[in-house]
Image 1: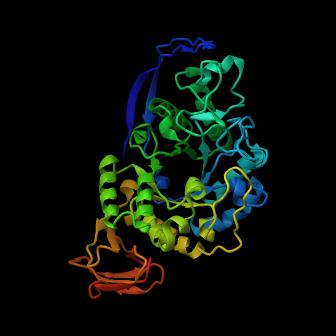
Image 2 (image 1 turned 90 degrees about the vertical axis):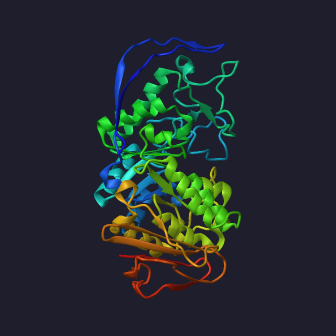
Image 3 (image 1 turned 180 degrees about the vertical axis):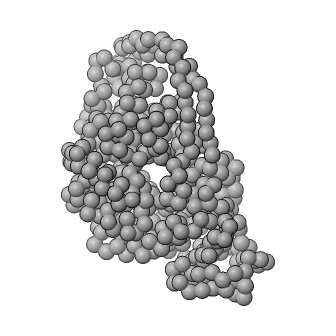
Length: 458
């Protein structure tokens, strides 16, 4: 458990540029910051990303609600909504713009519905057993944000002509870069973060490009949020310092890339071990890592699961759901989504057939029921199982008390036979997908089809 209590002296700075100057008041006020461990309810939780714009033909809050019973029955715990705010029009990309170009931090995009409809959704989600988090874009806003006023020019990074600029080193030309040297802007951002917890009773945030925002801001903001509610915070970044900033979970970008590289033959199966060992040295045991084979960025810009993982998609999802970390399901993943969903145009996801529902339901039930694969220190680390076929087979077990999960994966495009070598953990276990009993005290030889998997649980 990471619990940090310390003091920061906040000194308000003067923000200056050639054509704009905004005076701020110095203060020696001391703020107490207390960062909390992840909420206890998150110990065996999973997360589901809702691309609200593309989820239904209507693309509305009300239309999405019809899917909530199905998602809850599947075992989804956390609903993460991509930004629900109004989208800017200045420098807009495409006909609909990016949902990450926020025009008003305290409003709901009228294309999605109303604030009252969203509040009702959150209340109904809570009654069903969901937690709800929303996407938050703290690094930048739309160019025509309601924050861009003559009095607030110092809230933004400006060029020599006093004009807003987009974030340096990016092609995000539809958003204006906020200036975190300005304390008034920081205060407004914290106020907006608090607003959604107070008004809509959300349970936390997924914070976009969190690593581009200063750590001391996150420490102050997250501490303030915890004064209202013990929120859950997810950082869209793969940097350990964000956990010191108060985040409970960070993106497993590195692990995602390793899975892609192994599936594409660019890395050997052993690269998984190397990565997991290095990752465990960088992060603390209580730091949650989010595992995924796809999300809105990967799907749109880098390809579908099938494009990137080929016939290993299911095997890599089994890996992502059973190794250390919290698993993510993206909108449509349970329906076998096999198209790149447009980012700036309307492009409805097809839920006619939920072809992967049983697959994910089985994995989520295992996550809920078996303590060995719970999140952070609630679960157990993975121990490698040596096999006679190290080039193609990846095998491991996680054991905590009487709970055990063994995973055998064929990460090749051919059928593979193999033996477990020197395995001492022989016991009777159930294949979670077939419910067939396997006696590891007697059975040491296995055959798995191309991209095949076997998950045993006790």
